[in-house]
Image (cartoon, rainbow, N blue to C red; front, top):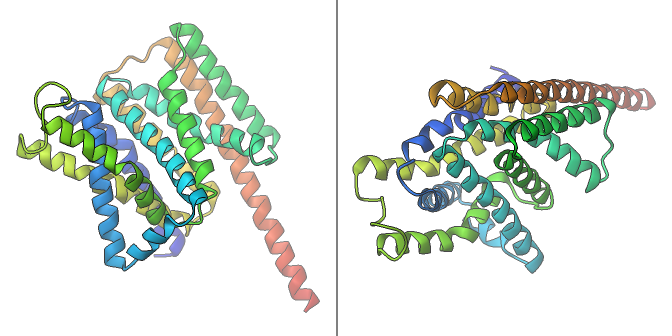
Length: 310
């Protein structure tokens, strides 16, 4: 099996886990979203720290918190990804996975806009056309339903900002995510202590009340970690344009879960909006393929010129 094939399979695995994760969080919908979120943070920290310990890289985690500016960057990234995770859990519990899938369809286009206006990256005509179509899709949904798709937009923006902030962190994916969950872990543990002590919410905490719930809550750690590890493996082996296209497996599976498994509404307004978003995705993917192909041709030409000079 070639390295490229391994990378593609790893990416498909990561996106499949992400895409089917609504089924998992739906099983926990009887537990308050903040409590589920607190467990996700806690067990993710346990899992990631365990991975680093096995690899003998825990000292790298300590070094990640060196310097006030880096700590502030990690804290900001932690705020973005924590907000994103909580919104996803909350949206799943209240039956809004159609909106979560829309958010992850929009995210790459938000990332392109952030690259343009924050990092000064240039955009091609296809990318601008994709952004225009996505804006039209959100506008149709807003006008048709009488309210903006706040969950979709919040998921797309928080994840886009998270990626932008991570660009300034010279840390590997496992180390950086471990550091991010470590920042919010004290708050998560405090919430769980309050919940189990009867201080917060009605009743007591879910962990320990039943074997099934306890095991499901513990599963949130590996469920969070495994797709990130697979994604990291894929990014090292395949072209970014391929990664960009394959990542749409995630919102597509979320959409299918919402409409087919959970029976969420998919009105004519939703259909029109999603048609525009899917057209935007197609244009964006085409532009990414063209850009990647042009980059490879330029690299091959430069390599050939270098060989001739020698």
